Amino acid sequence: MNNFSEQPDRRIVTDSAGLNRFLTRMYGNMVVAILVSAFSAYLTMNTFRREVFGYFGAHPAMIWLILLLPIALSMGISFSATRNPVGAFVMLMLISIIYGVEFALIAGVYTGASIASAFVSSSVIFIVMAIYGTVTKRDLTKFGSHAMAALIALIIAYIINMFLQSPAIAYIFSFIAVIIFTVLTGWDAQKMKQIYVNHGDQVSVTGLAVLGALQLYLDFVNLFISLLQIFGMSDRN
Image (cartoon, rainbow, N blue to C red; front, side, top):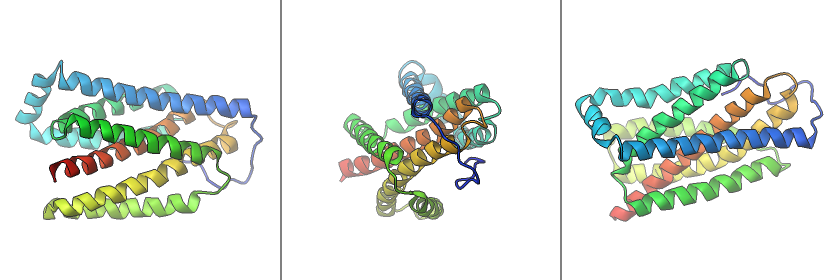
């Protein structure tokens, strides 16, 4: 999701203060994105519940729009973040709003306890892996590459299961997804740190922070959704 080489020919020396400012900005953007999603979900579930649910009930095909639009916006951020940081940040906020609406649409299927458990669990996993990815000296590239390959295979398997509609298979896939995004969280945290160290003097740090925030936000969102499916299925059993 970026145009940077993970093994550049040159390596710049970065002071710790500059690195800390970058990490603070990146995680700050990510937290803002999560808060925007939460606020968007709250408004959808409460203030605009009748309008939103009525609209999607009358136009079910529009569900595909809110499923595919974040993908297009993510690609836009990946290609433009360092050239147009403000535009990239706006697209990140749009993604956050759309995911908030998606969360509201699926929230009715799950209990409040399941939602709370999934959020707390995903937060703990994310924080631990983000810290680990940031401070570890171990190269996580191999693990991240394997996780990406597994993610592609999982997406294909998810599509196949859309036709099979097997709850048992979906339940197993949710556990696999948790493992995949746990690994990706650590890898993305390390990767963005290394990109800053290697390219921080060549590109917009603000845009780079938005790009990192997007990747980590998506890791968190997918962790949350996967754990929500696990807790939700467990409640029904």
